[in-house]
Length: 438
Image (cartoon, rainbow, N blue to C red; front, side, top):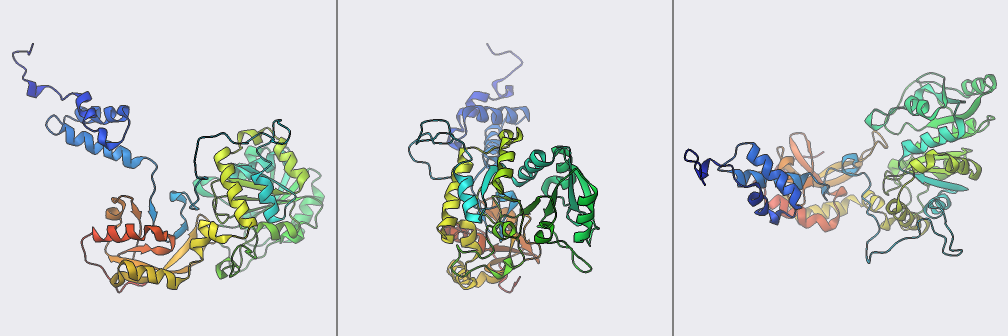
C-alpha cells in the first residue's frame, strides 16, 4: 500500500526494469544491472533510463574492441603493436600443446614454434616467453645469478613503463658491472672487466632501439665482445630476423639499414639473442631467446621458465608466423605487407576515398623501434581536430593531429577498411584542408 505522503513518482525506478530495457546493448545482465544502479544512485529519477543506457554503452565501448589504426604508427603500442591475429578458430578442439603424437607421451610446448623461429634466424635452439623483458630476465637468472654481467653505461636503457635494465638485472640475481661511459665504451673496458673479475658470467649488449646517441661516440661490436672469454648475450629488442629480409621480394627497405637482426647477430658471435614477438617480427606479444642449444636448455630448465611461459594461442600464432617466414611469404605477415606498400598505391586509395582530402604524409615504425625513421606515406587530411569524432564511430577510427589538422594515414589502414574511412568521413561535417602536407 502506498504511503500517504509518498507518490509513485517519488520512488526510484526499478533497477531490474531499467536493466531489462537495455538487453539490445549485448551486455550480460549483471553489467546492465550495474549501469542501472549507477544511474539511480546519481538521482536520475526522470531520466534514469537514458542515463543507464549511456552508462551501459560507455561500458561496452570500454571493452577490448577492434579499431582502425589511421595514425601512421605501424607498431602502435596502445593499439597492440603488430596487427596479428590468433589462428582462425573453427570447430572447438584441443591442440598438441604438450603432447607428442608419435609416442603418445607428454611433449614440450617449446618444441614447435620456438624450433621454427630458431630455424628462421639460424640459431641452434630457441624458447618463447611472454615478452622481451621476460626473456632478458630469464637469461640473466639462469646464466648469471650471483655472478657479474658487464654492460656498457651507454646501454643501461629504460623501456616502456619505467622498466630499466639495472632493475631487471637486480631482480634476476645477477650483479651489474658498468663499463665505459655514456657516450664512449671500448673493447678494452670490457676486457679489463672480464680479466679482473673471476665471477664474470656474461657480457650483455643492449640495442638502443628507442633512442640514439650521436656525435662523439664509440661502442663495441658483437664480434669484438665475442673475442672475450665469456658468452655474449645480445638484446636486439625489435625482433628483425634477418637483415637481408628474404621474405620481401624487393629486399630490405632503406629504413632498416642500421637495425640489428637475429641471424647476423648470432653469426657475429653472440651466444644468445633476445627479442620481441610483436615488433619487427610482426606477431603476438612474446619474447624469444635464441642461440646456443646448451644455454637455451639452461634457460628452459630454470624455475622462472614455467612462470614466464606463453599459452597455446601465442604459440600457435608464432608457429603460423614462423612458417610464413620460412616460406619467404612477406605478404602473409600483416606488418611487412603494410610497411612496404608503395606510396603511389596509398595515393590511389586516398583518391578513391576523397580526392580533395588527399595529402602526402609520413608514417613511423613505432613500438620503441627505429627512432627518427620516417616512412613516406599518403592519406587524408581534415581541417581542425576531429579525432574525437572519428573515435566515436563504429568501428572507431584512430587518427592523429598535426599542424592543426587531423591526419588519416592510410599506410596503417587495411584496404578492406577503406569503406569504413569513407563512411566515417561522410558522417562528419566539413570543412577540410586539402593544402596540408606532412
